[in-house]
Structures are given as C-alpha cells and as structure tokens.
Amino acid sequence: MGEAIVKFESVEKRYRGNLQTDGESGAEQATAPDVVALAAMTLTVEAGSFVAIVGPSGSGKSTLLNLMGALDRPSSGRIFFNGQDVNDLDDDGLTRLRRERIGFIFQFFNLVPTLSALENAMLPALLSGERARDVMVRASAALEQVGLGGRKEHRPDQLSGGEMQRVAIARALVGDPPLLLADEPTGNLDSKTGDGILSLIVGSASARRTVILVTHDPRIAERADRVLTIRDGRLHSDERRASR
Image 1 (tube, rainbow, N blue to C red):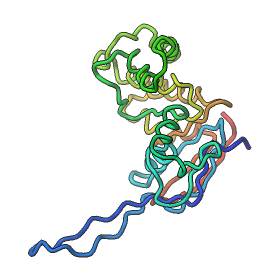
Image 2 (image 1 turned 120 degrees about the vertical axis):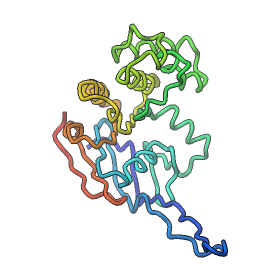
Image 3 (image 1 turned 180 degrees about the vertical axis):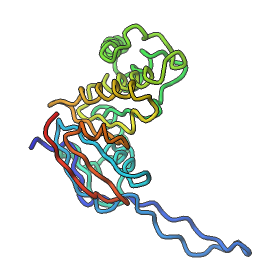
Image 4 (image 1 turned 120 degrees about the horizontal axis):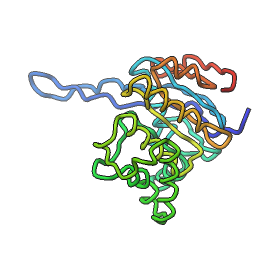
C-alpha cells in the first residue's frame, strides 16, 4: 500500500437546521435538527490510486469530494493531506493547498466565456502569480495532450461539450497537481465523448497523481482501483480491485 495522500479520521459535516416560525404569529419556534451530510467518515486514500465514489443522489458524494479538496471544512473530525492536518490551515493556507496541490474538474466545466481555451487553461496558474510565459508553455502542452492543439484560440461558445470538458481537464493538469478531483465529469456528455474524457482522466492517474472521481455511471466505477459507496452520508462499502 502506498503513502496516504488523503486521510479522514471520524469526519462529519453537518448543516444547521432552519429556524421554524409559527405560521400565524410569526413567532420563532425551536430550530429544526441539523442535517448530517457526512457522518463518522474514516478512510485513507493512497497516492497513485484511482478511486470512484458512487451512491444515490443526496448520499453525500459531493460533500465528501469537497472536503477532500479543501473546498469546505468539516464540522468535526480531522482531515490530513500528505500528513498535514488541514484543520490547522487558515483560509490563506487552504487557498494555497488547493492552488498548488489539487486539480478540480467540474461537471459544468466552469470556463470563463470571454476567454479562449488557452486563456482558460492558464487562468488558475496566472492567479497564483506565476510568469505568463511559463504558464502559456504548460497550458499549450496540456491542450495538446487532450487533443485541442488546434482549438487553443476558440472561446467556450465555439467549442462542443466534449471540447469544453477537455479544456477543463487541461486547466486542472497545468499545475501538475498530485491530487485530481472530478465531480461527474462525463454527466453532460454523450457516451462516445464521455468515454474519451474518461480515458484522459484515468490515464492521468499514475505513481505521481491520485484521481478521485464522483460518478453515477457503473462503467466508470468498473475501471477504478477502488470503489467507495456512500449511502445516507456514511461509507457503506469499500471495494478494492486489481490495478488498471
């Protein structure tokens, strides 16, 4: 088993219940119970693995992914990234962690509509203060890697859904992050395009990079080294499989 890149110790994520009011008087009543999105989650993800997170809608998959990506803080418990207790980081520290160590691929691409494919791929690294010339070289190479060498100057409205998702993948890879997180990255694509996108994501998992992917598609889960099934905010099963 390899070195742990992400480790959860009894992690919970709760959201405060809404304050109830009396319909006639408008008087405030007791607060509704907290909503538990993730409960008592303990797990370790080894570096270099490809992990699929599956489960029904509302089960806590995206909450788990957001916590892994330091996009949210746990209500209780501890999360470690490469041995660093994430709870010890302030907001600036979390921003640096996300910017320098984690790549994100979202279902709806999150591209800036007025920027070209190349500019979109460059944007996070530029916001980090890196030299534009260095970032352009890496972004161009990333777009070539995902098959968009001839589409670098096209804006999102000039690209297909599959091409926009490829730009999002290139953007995530520009910083060469050790952890790549993807939330339903093929959910809005036809099966042929989705298969191509999946191959790109799976191919990026290596000894140097861990890929964790949320999906409803059992075909995608079949290609993972490990499948985490989440139900009602809890880890229902943890299946390890043979290497890809």
